[in-house]
Every structure is written in structure tokens, then in C-alpha cells.
Length: 75
Image 1 (tube, rainbow, N blue to C red):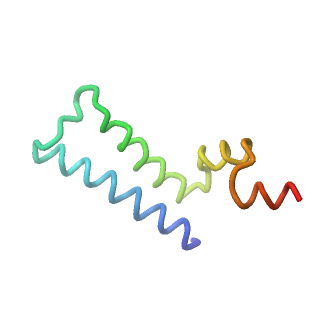
Image 2 (cartoon, helix red, strand yellow):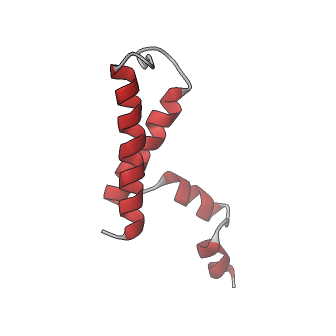
């Protein structure tokens, strides 16, 4: 597992666990629509991308030719 994957795994796990902990303590109510669901999505996406290597944002940035990988492929 690469360092980048480990960073994604740790970050995704921390984001998800912090929201679950906040929900369990009553600080956050995730049973109804909330902007915090975006944070849940980001945390879970970071975790899954670290395990599978698939990240939707990477694909979007490549199509838009944004970032160092896209810049090097243009030259």
C-alpha cells in the first residue's frame, strides 16, 4: 500500500469515525437531511479509494486536464 493510500485511509477513517461519534453522543443528528452527509460521503469515499484505487475526483481532474499528471501528458 502506498503512502498516498495510507493517508487516504487514515483521513477517511477519521472523518467517518468523528461523524459517527458525534451522532452517537447526540451532538449531530444524521437521521435527517443535513449538510454533514457531504462529510460522510467524503470520509467513505476516501476510505474506499484507498482500498480500491478508484477516486472519482481524480478521473474528473484528468478529464479537465488539471494537475501535474494531466500537464505532463500534454507535453
